[in-house]
Length: 307
Image 1 (cartoon, rainbow, N blue to C red):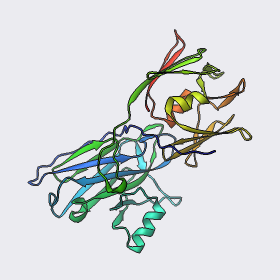
Image 2 (image 1 turned 90 degrees about the vertical axis):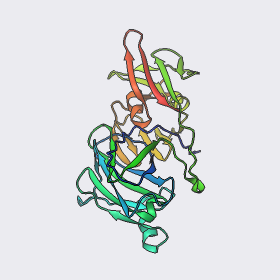
Image 3 (image 1 turned 45 degrees about the horizontal axis):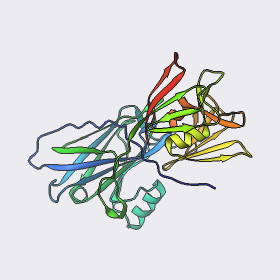
Image 4 (image 1 turned 90 degrees about the horizontal axis):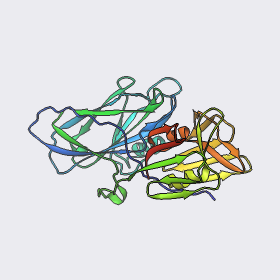
């Protein structure tokens, strides 16, 4: 059966703030939804920034928030026109069609902004929205493999606080407990994988593929990252449900699909001794893996991750 499980991931976006003196002070909380580690050329993703003040009447008239992508570009449609950036009072993460419909019928308050250029947009927040709640939604694409760094500045003396995990269900603003950083150690040829405080026993150990990449069995992927994985043996298809993202790989194919967008793989998944194996380097694109290292003397791969 197909199952869904939301995996919490740490946000690696960098938020920089420029401070300009102003008589009114406001503590504004910035929550960033989704995985900021975006891989693949022109891989479109949706990202939300939630803004809320901690009191009323702290900001007068308006505040202008400037969003800059440091290693990415705002997404464009097939005609080369920028996709709009939305600011609404929604407490749910909506897709573009839902936002447009709700804005049109008046059930959602907000407006749309077009980016100024490939990596900059200025969003003006009216007083009645920033004093209560505002959510900014935009789509962007990675310029190259790696993180899309995000910087935010404003024209008021506002203190931004980065919240890695924010819960807005049932209009709640209570902070959730953040994900814990773990370290995994995978030794080629060993039937035991160390993941945090856990020992994961596998019947088929990790090995080095013909093109030089460490590959681990599919079962280990599920246990290390606490991920929901569906295996279609009839078509040799792997589906990984990672929070709101769906990743689809096919045995022997050198690409995967992330939310239906194709992204190249360094090494295709393969079947060995009846077990399916995936390259660690490709899993780095799916999960929030950091500091992936290889020790040639001990034939051991290590990395940090958030479970």
